[in-house]
Length: 522
Image 1 (cartoon, helix red, strand yellow):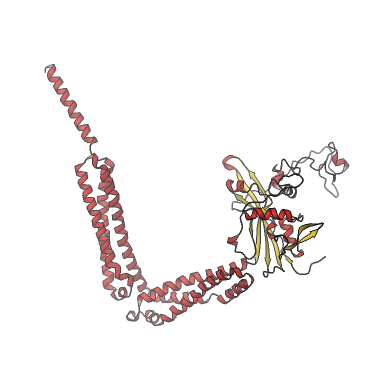
Image 2 (cartoon, helix red, strand yellow):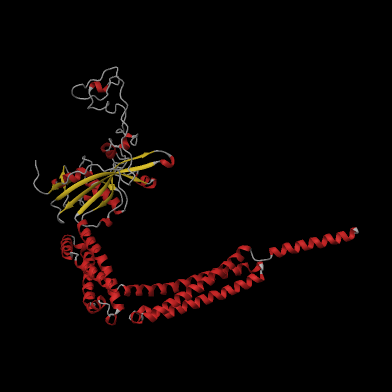
């Protein structure tokens, strides 16, 4: 073969290869072709499912004609099934166009094919869902009819459960709360009316279904209005579940009005490092319960719990040691608590020149100071960490201004001009010098920080205590209290607790409730 013939053959072979390659690049992507094939199978399955639903519903409508004639929803079954069939037919048209595009196999049809696939899938799935909804609804009513005597028994059980709720006791609690806290009257009235409405509606339904229930109990279907009976059964079931919850909620809300509480951040710590770092807060909850709105008698209690918190929550409250981070006054629901941190106890003070159930303003040397009444001494001590120092009217004005602005009030120490409350506050650092936070160096810049020989410079230390060369190790009192000189000093005890796996650590013993307002021992 000559060289020219070889050249011509090579050119033809190259052109043929290029034609084959470009023919492959010009077709629909393989993934699109695979989806078209999968949809063909899915559509066939959907046709079978729709036909099965139509057949089952038609059979039920024929065999249980008396039942479905009494059900308004059953009248819509044929139309709903026809709409489902129409939708599936529209999906079939999209599939036919897809198959045509698949045969033409042009890459330029990719966008069109993907859009048709998305629409066909959506329409096919919706049509099957509609048909299945009709089938399940019809089967549900047939099942109820087959168990009609049991359904009547359930109605009686639910009716008795509704009447077992003592709404009289609930109404009495609500009426007392309305008298003591008139601003809650409308809300409590509305809730009580809803609860009473369940009881009234239950009685009406029970009376109106007397004859159908009797017929159903002996399977005499000719005298049963299935639609009315089943609707009444559903309403009674819902009422039996809702009424006890509403009655209990009314009692709970009424009781909340007679209690004030504060959540005070009394300690905090961090442990570990990196991803294993843990953040903990110690929350003291101080509660005061009163018998009526006058607040003349009641009890005060408190409890403390270590709480595991997130890093963000810890950092958000890091500046608020000793503060009430949440406060709920008497006359409010728990859901109406105030969440702007404020100095603990300040919320119980009345505006300048006024008094309230907690205390009054008292003049002394030309200055007004807030004084808590004796019956609230325990609550005051719990909130102020047993170190309450009367606040003057000037400071209360500043606090009120911050509160009106929805801002946290940290006060100002008149001697040092430093903050007075919160973690950086001089009053807080003195009151909480024994806290875990302080002992771990939290008050490192404060004179109350835990340091070796921390009281040597105090005016209350002994002469030997001021001498840095004197061993100031704590001694035991009683026999055998002396420690031999040669015996090495014991290592400081390790902390014996770890956060519990649950959100809370074991709580400190709850302080016993103290009554205030009655006679006091002096």
